[in-house]
Image (cartoon, rainbow, N blue to C red; front, side):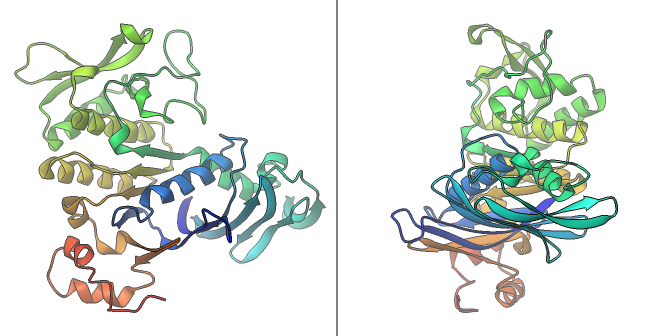
Length: 377
């Protein structure tokens, strides 16, 4: 399941009012815009929604989500309105057919009874999502699909990945392996050594990780895990480089190199575990030089296209923007409390005309060539 459209608002008529509209998403997505336009805020909006779907949080943060998903040819639209911790509206459509329609503590829901869809009334607590009170893989498969999306949603801030941060998973088994779970080792890349431990027995994947690191420009000959004593025995990354006759400990790696290592390991972990999912990376490639940013992005894009992964990332990096097709772009423009995304779906003429000019993609953004070709609504 992939998310394909985002509309959002909050605190309408109150301090802190905010609107986001017309974000269109495919398999590979670049979100860009000038500083303070709302890129990271959009990531937080997605994070909040996914955490609700996966039941990673019991807190119902206020907001109005209007989200569209695609799953095996089916189009789901989920409308959720929460005010002061209470659910005012919850509605789910599948290909235009209403499956769930709820207002507060009263609603109707369709369930699969054998091969027949039947409608029943229900009265959930006003502070609980329907997914928290109506779960049955056979009777309510559409709820399971949305929860599965949330459980396989992973969000990282590239600039926050730090080689001096160590964590131990909360679900450790004796011997150092970890239980699978929605709150497991993919929730925080300070636990990336444990991701590597989980896939280290697969020689093919380990060779691929080393090969990918070499493509980015790091002369890595071997990568493994060890123990970092000061952090109560937490696992750490150990790297062997060509022409360096001693192992390099995680805390001695550069931030840029460790960030690349962490994302490559995470992507290969998902591949090994045959997990589909949505990966969101804020500030993607922040701090990398042109050559490494381009090579690294190419590797991640290729894996996302090849595997059943959806990739969404924010960036203002010129070199990275030049390497992503304009049809994958969402350009954010903000007017006060309102943010609109300009993209190929709502401004096709401007995007198509620019392709004929022969300039690079970054010029389209930097010179605002999407402005004036088609007036904003």
